[in-house]
Structures are given as C-alpha cells and as structure tokens.
Image (cartoon, rainbow, N blue to C red; front, side, top):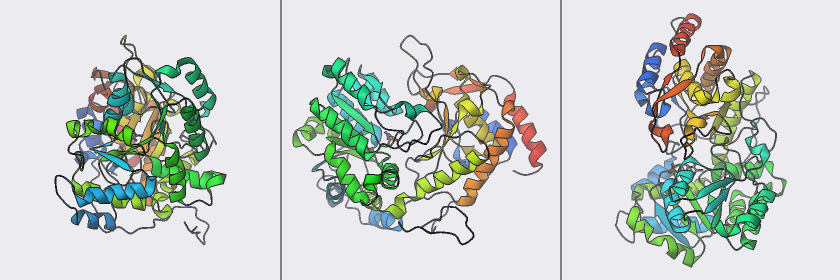
Length: 481
Ligand SMILES: *Cc1c(COP(=O)(O)O)cnc(C)c1O
C-alpha cells in the first residue's frame, strides 16, 4: 500500500475507490427519532431503516461490493450439484488458506452450529480469547462452557497494546493442566468482535496453536474479522512488515485445523463456511451440511453469493482494499478522542467503540448504559449503533444478571460505505451528546427473551430522559434536522 500524504499536512484517510451506485438516505427530525426509538422498544435492532440516517449497526452483509464482485455474480453457475461456482470458490479457498476441503454454510453462526454439534458435549470446555454472542449460544445450548483467556490488557478500554485480542498463554497452559480432558478444541477469534475488533498477533496465534497441538487438541479459527486482523498484523507486527497478506494468511492457516467464517464480513459478501485441511475432520462434520444447510455444493447460499465471496476473498488479499476500514475507524476514533469522548483505544477493526461506562458514568450497569447510549446516539443523530454490553449477555442459570466486563456502543463502519463527511457528522453529534450526557438515563426490560435477548428484547427508559434530550437538541440546533 503506497502512502499518500497531503501537502497541507492533513492526516485523513483517502478513499481508494470511486462510488458508482448510491442509495438515497433520509434524516428524519429529532422528534420523529424519539418516537421511532420508542416504537422500537429502545432496541436499535428493532428500528426501521426508513427512520435511520447512518446505519452503523453492523459490518455484517452491508459492505459495499466491488465492480468485480457484481460482474462475477452475473456468471454464476446455478446447478444443484457440482456447480462450477462451488469449484471456483473452493479453488479460491485452497489458494488463500491452502485447505483441501470446504463445507458451505448459510452464514457464520451456521458454521458454528456444525462445529459445536460435532465437538461439544455436556460439560465440554471451549477456551477462546473472547466469545462472540452466537458462538457462545451454540456452545452453551449443548451444555458446554466458554472459558475466556484474553490477556488482561484486552478488557482495558484505553491502552496502547497493539494486539489486545491475544491469548494469555499461561492461562491456556494452566487450563489444559487442570481440565485438558474436557477440551475438544480451542477457538481463536481473529479479531475479537465484542471487545472492539482488537486483533491477535501472528506470534500469539502460532504460540496458541503449538500449545493446543502439544496437548493433542484442535485449533479452530473464527476468521470472520480476519481482514482487519491481517491489516493490523502487517502494520503493527515487526516480523510481518515485509510479508504480503497472502503470506501472512498462509502462515496462520498452516497452524489451524479448522477455519470458519462469516462471509457477511470476510469477503464482503454473504454466506459462510468451514475450510479444513484434514479429510477425517471434514468427514466428521460433512453430514450436518445437507441436514441443516443445503446440498454440499451450496450449503444454503445462492450461487451469486458464492461468486461474490470468491472474488471478495481475493480482494481481501489487497492492502489497498482492507486498509480502508481500519483507516476510517482510526480517523473517527482519534477525532472523538481529541474531543475528550471516551472511546476504546487503540482503534481496532469493524467499528469505532464508545466506552459507555465512562460516557454515562452516572448510569448503573443494571440499567444498561450501553443500551441507553445506543438509544441516545440514535435520537441525537439518526445514527444506529449496537449495544455490546450487559444486554448482549445472557442471564445466569439462576436468573441473575450477568454484568458484562465492558459496556460498549459499537458504531460499525461497513467497508467502503460511508464518506468522510458522514463520519464527521457522526463525530459532531456524539460530541454534542457527550456535552449533554447528564440528561441521559438508564433503561429497563419490558419484554425479555431468555436467549439472544439483545436481538428482540424490548425496553423502556427509567425516566422521561428521552424527552429532555429532544428539548435540549431543539434548543441548540434550532430548526436543523
Ligand atoms: C458475525 C460473526 C459471527 C457470526 O456470523 P453470522 O454470519 O452473522 O452468522 C461469528 N463470529 C464473529 C467473530 C463474527 O463477527
């Protein structure tokens, strides 16, 4: 990636693509925004798109596609079995990961279901650097337990550690000594979604794999966010600075037994799957694909998605392509930091993360500060983020609240979707909100599903704070939207 400097000294990210298809956006007035979040049970997942200006909920399935991806979708080979599209995709995976076998699945969590059903039993322990919501749900559903072994620095929200997603190797060794017989596999999430898209170093991944293999167990990589992680390895890890992204990917893949991913993120497409080196492991999982996903050459995906994925995976090996996300996220994070807004540092992948515990230090964790901040950011700017805190956790078996180790509001930057002025607008509204943070109060559940409650749970404010916020907005912004 060539470095591009501005003559005037500006340090801003420059888009290395041009926009050829656009989608019109509406910004509804603040009064309507307050009404809309109320209709949505103060859960940003339940907002309707017509009420949203900047959708920063997720980077999943909403990344902009390239001209090459769209062109490939037109030549997809639509046959039930033996499609040439599937061959092109498996060839691409072989080229990138050097894996001989591929099991297609309709998205990342479907791959997690197949892996969990194959390897997790009542009482199994699955060590990982950090859990992801759907991963944990699949493991606990089968009676397994998740053991989080991220380094202490990983859950420190402000840090200069370049690889906050790293495993604590000592803890991993100790866990194997104590409970090795209960561990079928160790899962490495590159990079960690719930703690701010923080990466894992190449060195750490290799060390983890060596420990796990010494104990005769499997290493499973969740590569859903690998593209950002590759960028961070290349730019932050000394030993990798002269390696290409393809070389780094090969080094990682050689150490993994199973690589699964959500192609809604990795490969800027949709769908997902499991890439495997070893035939016997492939055979162990294979029968679950036709049972739950679809025949072995499509696994619930359309051939168009598979073609887009093959091209997207190829583009993931291009630094000009994968750098766009992390550079925009760094810009947004640094701007907020300069304005004194509490954000997770260093900037990671997938989005900018606000630290809701510091932003709303007056809101108790039992009243969901990250959820309240998500609602407030929507009211202030029509910007939809995602709560990644206690609401995203599951209650304990005895019904008590499991307080999250971090309370974050994630503002995802889907790749190549937003312009710099839109990011500046988001920064501006968040700064305004920060200056009026004492107006924001907590939330409580009105309807609470027992599993994955963050998706469809409904809440209400503990006071009339949303009305107060709208009044303050009107006063400061006059007739502006
Ligand atoms: C999104 C994601 C998943 C689940 O993938 P889906 O395609 O949404 O089912 C799993 N792991 C990580 C790290 C993710 O970011």
